[in-house]
Image (cartoon, rainbow, N blue to C red; front, side):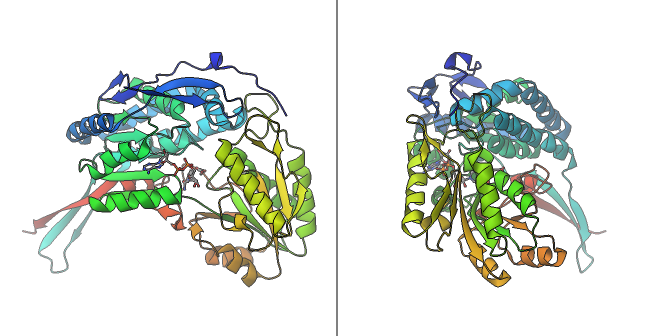
Length: 487
Ligand SMILES: NC(=O)c1ccc[n+]([C@@H]2O[C@H](COP(=O)([O-])OP(=O)(O)OC[C@H]3O[C@@H](n4cnc5c(N)ncnc54)[C@H](O)[C@@H]3O)[C@@H](O)[C@H]2O)c1
Ligand SMILES: O=CCCC(=O)O
């Protein structure tokens, strides 16, 4: 175990209020943000209420018309300046993320680069919103198809990627000309509040972005989703909460984008380069301590290579240093909270009770903080609860398969369909299996699919819509056409 290097005194200066209509305001009450490695309170943040939510959506609605009419280049340049400011403040953002949710500083710096890139990407997309024109079949009318901003948007983000999940929504919303109300996760409001301040400094007009952190998500979000002023909700989080929000959005027939939970299969075929598969597994499993929707949750390995793969993966995992994310040399930080740690302990205990064998790890690390040792489980039975549940921790359960049909059936035996990983050196097999895997994204001989240039998203209960890539802005635009008689 490594120990802490940074103290709360090293916390960068961050506004801790509510940001409504271009001004930072005090809240009627506050809540504490804690470091999951030490339990130390980092800051007290304004705790938004339903009244604050109403003020925020009123400001967004009032700003919408003017904002929609700004020049694309103006919106583009605000995003570009925000990109530069985030990059210039890399250390501040990285430190905040490590202190708020635990990821090692090196990974947090990686998230700054990843998250900032959504701002740059959508600064480039803002000036490329294009329409279409056609003539009706009977030749009587011209159809001129344009794009219009959806309107005020509700943005809700989780704690695991506190910066990137915000910029992946704010970037396209700004580019499209939408105003926003934004609710970050209560575990990680500070990163979101600093991002809000950076966007203000970059020149975002008053009322365009309104940020309300809260411990009462249901009260705030219900005000926004059912209140009738917002036109769209973009949510990233668990499938269960996504379903609640879809039900609420139905009441006002609101546009929805849902980036929900995953249960990624990781397939290693008999012809795979096993060393490359282990490299890929380290990334797909351990990025963000396993607390990622993209995390490999189930490893299906061909019988011919399962012993080699499992042994090599266990060697690599057991060599990792677990500890405080701020300490030099830490590879794996704490899990987010006691509930997250308890869930991992329970899932491992269930798998072991059903016959799984612990190859390495299998226990928490340290007496304080929410640390869990990187773990490899072999001989995991299909009915282990972790095969059907997002583990959200550094645990790699290895299952064996004998033929392709069996591997595909197992991989697809889930309600989730976000991402899958496939390791094979046979190009025909690569095409064949990628076609048959039910997922929005497939990592072929790689353990990382996330990139601002790609349309991120899932099928089945992993969600609706895509974020990033060329289509990311479409989620924030409506089609609108003019029918013009042809003279
Ligand atoms: N598909 C993706 O792109 C993606 C990315 C990151 C995380 N995730 C998923 O997010 C989950 C982990 O994040 P989490 O624990 O923060 O998820 P969560 O669903 O508990 O919370 C997500 C957000 O929803 C808010 N929320 C909770 N209850 C709500 C309610 N009743 N009404 C409105 N808002 C509510 C939370 O405060 C938070 O801001 C995992 O399932 C993970 O797979 C998905
Ligand atoms: O938690 C989900 C991962 C998000 C990402 O990789 O962009």
